[in-house]
Length: 440
Image (cartoon, rainbow, N blue to C red; front, side, top):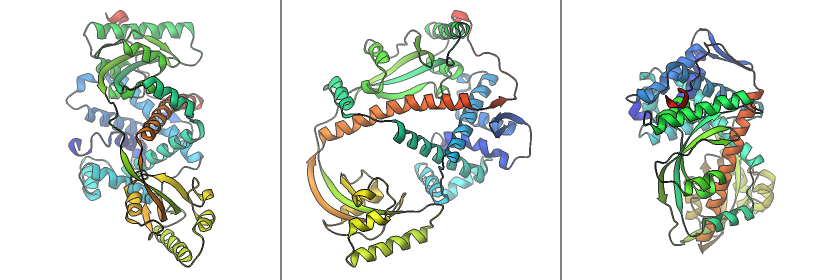
């Protein structure tokens, strides 16, 4: 299991614990989350999954009661996100779950059958695993909808960020420790959090605990169990207040405690690298239009394919492609424009779409094309060679700015969701995870 599944399935295995109640007898409630519950066996299974991921590195884990509290919070947030997704109409079909599992198996160099057998040997019910994948897909879509409705990046933001970046391409790998504060925190809560973050910083400075271990043990951030790792980021992905600090730091340095909207933080600069872009590249771009018929809970594979074949016959018989697309396509972003996708590179929409487009001649209509979205008809309109160096830089900058905004807004959304929910934790209240004052 460890070699085959980790780390690709870490989140899914944790989420699978949420569904253990489907095959477990009623064994005691660990927490009530709105109209749902978390059973003690679910919590125990999730904790065991985390311990398995840290096999050989157990010393990095916090005390049992603190680990239990951290895992409980993850399970609570997963319950809340899945419930919100369901209430807003987000669904994941059986076919989509099958494709996701197939992708996971492929990444782990196994077949779906081998993956299923391995799960069974590790005592994980396949039904629970499928349910966890369904939940992960639903949460991903909830996040995507959130991004589409709330996150915008203006051209001015892109140009300003590119100007600030200049010719450099420096990226920073960061990690953080968060001691959280509630909204409208009292003076006593602020003082307690300040004392805790100062104690953590003292432990690190004295060499009594490395930063990653301190993050696992003391951080309130959702990525605490990953050692607080924030990954690689460019200047445009780092809040301005942090960016000014990082410029004067060396790899391995840790900031003094920083007060932010979520609480007190310690930030570590782990590594620095030069990620400068190479020379602008000449690439082939295609302009095409398409019609999409989705495969979902209401439309089977056979029904979707039959419908797309019927539409193809109409177009081949002389019907106007654009009008057929406006009347029948299920792609909301291109439907009104007669299915026009504009200019794109071969892999921009994925290989399963791009390869058939590349194989067409200009003006040619494809046979039905299957992708994760459903069945398509594609008509390639034009081809060109273009220098996309500047275009790529702008697209990448827009994506990184949007990702930074989404991270901030999504975390705020999760805090709001958590604050509005009814959560009654019924396991023993753990002791405060604060280190000794000043690290002593």
